[in-house]
Image 1 (cartoon, rainbow, N blue to C red):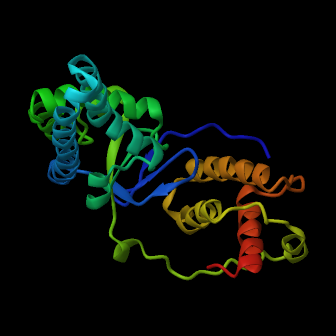
Image 2: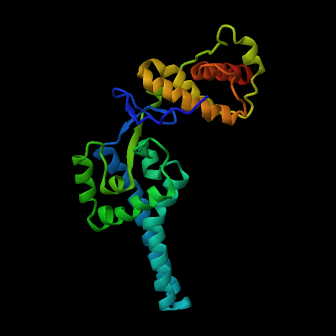
Image 3: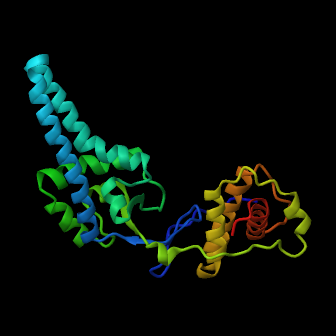
Length: 260
């Protein structure tokens, strides 16, 4: 099974985007209203932490000395303003408490997960956009850009997505029976190494293949098939179609775990 070319993100007519890793993201970009509300929650948490730090520094300055207190305040201020979004977004899949409350998440423009470097760039530029200029530049940028990006997003190559409500994305029970003639092959597959998240990617792809163009469908099936075969440490028989292989894997996973 050869790797196909990595396709660019394809719009899915308002229902999401398909990434090169064959993840169909059921999201839409977050507008200025939801982004502002989420940012205000984070700012409230950060300001509360800054106020608490100021009181603590004042109380401890006499004990540790004025210079030491100033240094401690500068370090803690940096951690609260810059470290807060970087740590949360890097460790919590592109979310901060404010974003999570509004159902928002940061991803790269390619649809991949936000990494430390993306979060750091966003936070550093956010120091100017959100703190020094009180959010005015950020609001204008979100309003004027096609994908609702502030300057930090444009520089880091990220977008903020809004997760759809549970009612619109509730999983529908579905069964993947073994393809005709592949019953014995499915029974022989060891999918114990396949995680629930990886199965979810396969399930999503198989349920959405008819929404994709043929070139994207074939390329995504090859990419996800290669990733899956590496994960389960299994080389498909020569000539097996990547999409058929994915159906076989999904069928074997359902047999093992009873999932739908």
